[in-house]
Image (cartoon, rainbow, N blue to C red; front, side, top):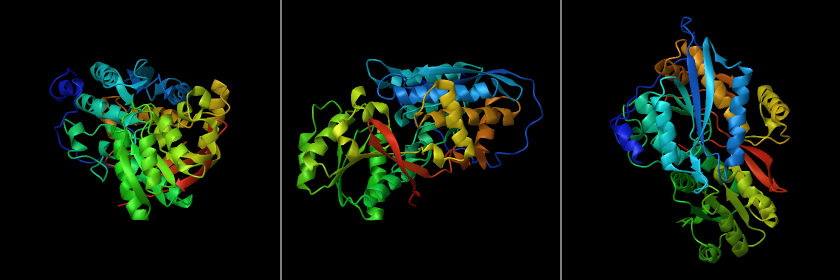
Length: 422
């Protein structure tokens, strides 16, 4: 589709503020297939930051997607599928950039063969790509986004969300990870469980970090946990000692960071640990659940902090998944020779599996029919467990994993069955 209207505005790095929510669709994931249609040559794109702190995670995502497509024989029903992995990061930025994500979304939007867009990895990037893809009618599945406002106007969202991301009113975006109302509840549950009484919080001011911080505030109030602060940080600061000392003076015994690794997360944890002491709990969300944060040799936190740090991420230990999930980890290890697959590998796999399934259920391979099939996904038995996609594009899964850090690696601690607060 030509780059017109709101699509052009989105490319100019804005996010289109027009359109109304589509009528919700209903139906079953195991619904009847359309009559067999002539097979097409279709392309599934992914857009992920393949450089910088998230590289290990996103390479695992890509490999998981490749494995799923290989197991399907490169087919979805009668249709032949090609997979193209795009990078929405730059070496200079060390993370995703709006320009790169815009370019990737436009490429997919202008390719008539596009069937599904897997991405983005960062919620801020999806604010850029959703309007472009929605206007072009391209179905989208994110394996990692958690920001509330991409799909709902629930607490934690900003005015005008989510409608402003869908310029035609056509909902094309889905995700297979629980949104941040659930992650926030999981973090607060974990901190209370660990005995935190007063918690200092910082956020990186990005869409994901600032949004999650707002929901943590709400969940903390509901669960009776005192937050001493919610400070928006300067990601380019040389240190955060003054914020850490302020937290100490306020009596904080724990610290939680809401943001991504690339925004100076390591320095914050070092400074707050120094101020609050060796007994302080230090917490982070899925935005730091990666090698670049937990491994000292890869620029992450000092090994001395390992015992104090816990993070939440919507992935579980392999033995916590259904048999299909456990089999995935065995297959992934056999294919790629990785003994301890990154937790996000299974999300790349399931994103591709869901895309293939939706294309097959569409019958025609047409974007509108694939999108309809996506939103009709009900009671899907998958490697992640059984889930549905609701009318907003959200998964019905709610489990979060809590991970500690051991020898510079994430180590599964427990499953937190946190429910989003109403």
